[in-house]
Image 1: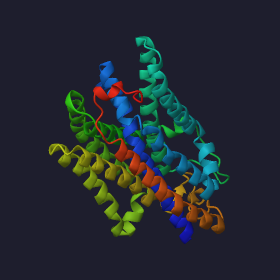
Image 2: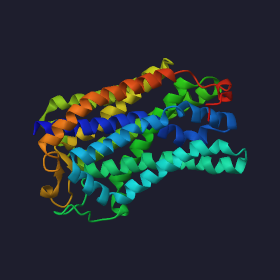
Image 3: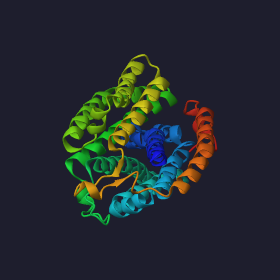
Length: 342
């Protein structure tokens, strides 16, 4: 049981790292048509995430790989039950990556408009769909005893699921605006700061509504009420949210982005901790639910994987920290002339 519990929280950590890193990419792409009014502004926005966006998605691949190897039953049920939603996410992520590379290949306004639209769709849609998917997991998925999903895509588009989608979009857009505030200067920075300031109260309202809805629609609060010490997760999420406002007012934009990152990681763990030991709760019958204990691989597999993870995850983290430091300079109009710029 200890191994399964360790892997449950490692699984949650990988999702949290993905949302923290690729979240600002989704946010910038969502804000792209609203803040990028000129060709120069659009290129600045793309280049603020240009060297990092593909590396950020390593955590998505890792989270999927861990699901497959550590919880194979969960993987099979998740990718069959949520097949349509997950394939939409995959296709939109592919569309976004292709858009970054293809946009500048032809100097034609019509060509660029097509890929500009694809950047927006490939950023907004995954953010929304990830939120819908995880909110539905929190709420419970209609799976039967055999693990077969008794519904369709529209089953997932319930009010609580859509609220989760809105929450993710708001978290990521604020995160993206803060990243741009730290990575740009002049008018572009002013736009990003104003946008983050305007979106913050909306995010706060959505967070409050989501927490209240979670109490009514899910059992996420059960573990917190049973073990009050777990409220530290919620306190950290609140601290991150308030830190955004405080650091923004002080014009400390990197610190504001760090506070946003803390908020996203803590918000993810709010759901993970609330779920435990469930991983895919059934809304039909509790005994049909997939847990960290009935959906895991053998203890030997988990032991071997744990050794591999303890070796390689720190290496990946060190590499990514190095990459973030290497590309920490501000993106300016002058930097767009380089051959490596998008």
